[in-house]
Image 1 (cartoon, one colour):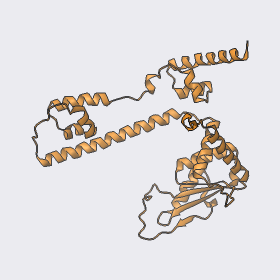
Image 2: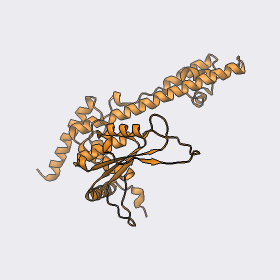
Image 3: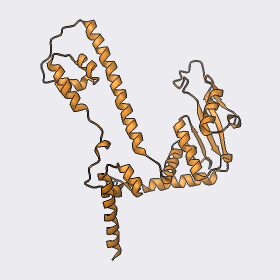
Image 4: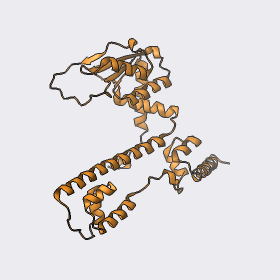
Length: 290
């Protein structure tokens, strides 16, 4: 058997396995993890012509809403009342029922205003439900992370948020500062993956003077599993009384700075890996046109 025919046979065997898993109801993510296929182009070829299982499809309630809106309009309901009932926007209702006769106005301006208010509240609730559903579905689609995926995520995260070396100011050191607890969790997991010892990690809280610095230190200490008494001196940002800050309230904990001692080599690895990521991105055919 030639190398070409062997490669074709391997692909066909892998495709049979992928198709079988798809027909069992597995998602693309689950199939990819099961078969260890990290290349999306290859996964597309393996699953070509196979429809996704029903459970991965987002439900489309627009058709049902449209039918119900038309039914209510034919009963003489106004846009405001339909909006209050269904929780959809007036622009959608208008599009759905614009060919139907307009009902006679039978209520006072105050009554109409109250219905409009209830309709807007219903719309906001519906939007929040849709927002939560989309985010929950997206979170479930992620599944388990491989070490390679975590490595690439960590490199990208650092290059977006970490301190970088400049030609005019050589700073080959790893310093990551962020106020997002999720980003800090991912970054520390990435450090663990790379084997960066905890003894080399130095922490420091950066926070506005009007916030509770002690509470912030305890918050970040719990998150990274470090006694806050070992943190460096907290950096307090001073500002004028006229400063109109938006990041206030009990959820505000300032930023956590994570500095890695002796990190020049680690920084060079990060920069090199980032260059590798950029170089691996396919160039669009349109950019090759003369």
